[in-house]
Structures are given as structure tokens and as C-alpha cells.
Length: 350
Ligand code: NAD
Ligand code: UD1
Image (cartoon, rainbow, N blue to C red; front, side, top):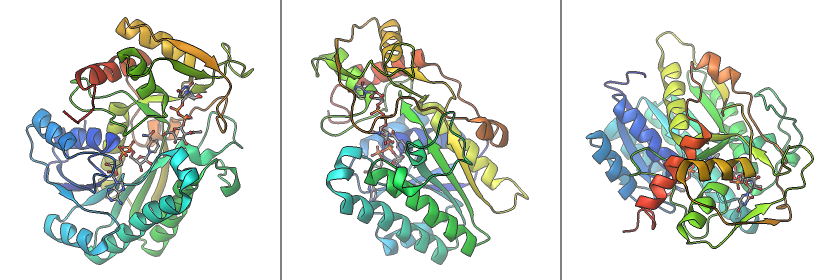
């Protein structure tokens, strides 16, 4: 636990899945949290519930992060010591169909944010990157020093993360009093144990956990398991490094505390936020059934195009430098995801 008393932190995209859990942790640990979001993939209700849980007031302002003048107004009023930049589009399939939209929103918002920070003298930035930048070239465990060539990322979404990492490296080099931390998330799942906030994907979700909870609830009939013929895993289904969203939120708090530490020189840092453990699809389904007592009806299907057989982090750099590591098990991830889904079958829509 860190003490952020008296420090204001601006969260772009803070009403979303990871942002709302991070807002909760930061508010509980004393920070004054301010959220800007255009609600294109979220609702202000998430932050209202964070206020209910934390008993803290969190201004939640409707703003498109591409609106630099609007951001400058917010920064002038609230004087944040740091920004955590979650805002962006993240649907992989949609990014393949509409690459221009992804470049426009993800680059445009980052560029406007950097301009506003420069004009308002805000010098600390944490960015939501993704394990997707490692592409299909590297063998896990994935470490931050591995090369991340542009032609090995699988889709425009991944490319946007990789290019933004490079944008921010140059930005930090040109503004040597800035601290920039790039956090590469592995596979975030789960929800706050209260079940009041959680992942609320719009439309038909593609990711595994929201599909599993919807099958258990009867909203989706059957879970398609995309391949059980991968020679790289014992049961043949692909494996991933799942991370509880509360561990991920605490990882942001740890990165922020390190960044704001007295006497720490400004720097660009990159950290994997993962557990270091790989869990296969079939293992996750077994854990879900154990955690919830629900049967998950499934069918084996062919592999999904673009899927890696195995992906997991080497989290030792974050363990050491941020004094952070994951605490929560796969069973807890499943229990909390199910608790949220059961309490909120329609997400934040009543
Ligand atoms: P999310 O969609 O729930 O949250 C993103 C938020 O940004 C949403 O509230 C959305 O309304 C907002 N937003 C989008 N464009 C905006 C704009 N132009 N102006 C203002 N607000 C805008 O997604 P999440 O899962 O919470 O992800 C947060 C960040 O982490 C994203 O950048 C995502 O790419 C990254 N990330 C997510 C995952 C994952 O599996 N969830 C994995 C790796 C990285
Ligand atoms: C996907 C994206 C990745 C993105 C991440 C977080 C692809 C190729 N990768 O990662 O870029 O950063 O989401 O949003 O889309 N699975 C099933 N049945 C399902 C859904 C998934 O068997 O209905 C399997 C997949 O084959 C995979 C695992 O579950 O092995 C996890 O899938 P998913 O949650 O979509 O995450 P990733 O594919 O790792």
C-alpha cells in the first residue's frame, strides 16, 4: 500500500474496465482522482460505483482526449501531478476492419495529451501498453528487453500500442524532466470482489473470460475452445498469463509511487505486468467450474487465426523495481468475474 495523500492523478479513459479499478485503488490509497472519458466504451456509472465503494468524490468529466484545449482546461483546474493514459480503442477485430479509426483515436489522443502536458507543465505519464507488442517473434517468458519489430505485431491495434510506445520514448527524450512509464499488460480478467465494478464489453465480447461468464449465465449457448491441437501445451489448448484486474490496478499504483518518489531522476521505464504463469483455456475452464460450481458448455473448434500458442511474462523487473507482484489466483479471478457478471447481467445498463 502506498500513500498518495494530497496528490491529484488524472485518468484518461478512467471510466473503463482497467481505469475504474485503478481509480478505486488510487482513491483508497489517498489520491485525488480525476477522470476524463468520452464514454464510447463505458458509462459514468462505473465511477459512481467507485465513489460508493470508496466514499470519495471523483470528478468524472465527459471529454474526448483528442480535444487538447479541453484537456488543458482540466489540467489547469485540477493540477494533476501525473496522468495515467488508459483512453483508446482496444477491439482487435474492429482494428483490422477500421485501421484508420484506430490510428486516429489512439495516436490522436496520445498526441493531444502530450501537447496538453507540455503546455500545462505536467511531467509524469503512465501509458497502458500491451503484451501484444511482443508479436509472434519472441519466445516466452517475455522480457522487456526483447526486440519488438513492427512487422511482427498481428493487427492495427497492436501496431498502435507499439507506435505509441515509440512516440512516448521520443517525447521523454525531448523533455528530459518527464518521467514516462510504459506498462505492458498481459491478460486482465476478474473484477473488484464487491461485484460492483467489472468488465462491461459492448456487444458480443471476443475475449475468453467475458465469454465464459456469459455461457455460465446462459446468454451465450456454448463456449468455442479455439484449438486443442497445440503441441506446445500439455492439454493442447493455448495458454496465457491471466492477471487479476485488482493486481493490475495495484501495479499502476506501484508504478506511480516509484515515479513520484523523492529524488528519483526522470526516466523512461517499461514494465511487464503479468504473473509469470501460463494457464491454458481448458485449465481456466476447470478453475471457473471449481470456483463457481457452474458448468461451462463447450465445443472444440479450429484454432483462431492470429492466436499464439503460449504467452506469458517475465515479471521480474516489476517485481524488483516496483516492489509489486501478483497476489490473486486463477480461482479468484474466476470467482470475481462470475460475481460481477451474476450481479450485473447487463453490465452497467440497469
Ligand atoms: P476500456 O474500453 O474499458 O477503457 C478505455 C476507456 O477509454 C473507455 O472508457 C472509453 O470510453 C475511453 N475512450 C476511448 N477513446 C476515448 C477518447 N478518444 N477520449 C476519451 N475517452 C476515450 O478498456 P480497458 O480494458 O480498460 O483498457 C484500458 C487501456 O488498456 C486501453 O488503452 C487498452 O488498449 C489497454 N489494454 C487493455 C487490455 C485488456 O485486455 N483489457 C490489455 C492490454 C492493454
Ligand atoms: C487478445 C488479442 C490481444 C489483446 C488481448 C486483450 C487476439 C489475437 N489477441 O489476446 O491483441 O491485447 O486480447 O484484449 O485477438 N479463446 C477461446 N474461445 C473464445 C475466446 C478466446 O478458446 O471464445 C482462447 C483464445 O484462443 C486464447 C485465449 O482464449 O488462447 C485468450 O483469448 P483472449 O481473451 O481473446 O486474449 P488473447 O487472444 O490473448
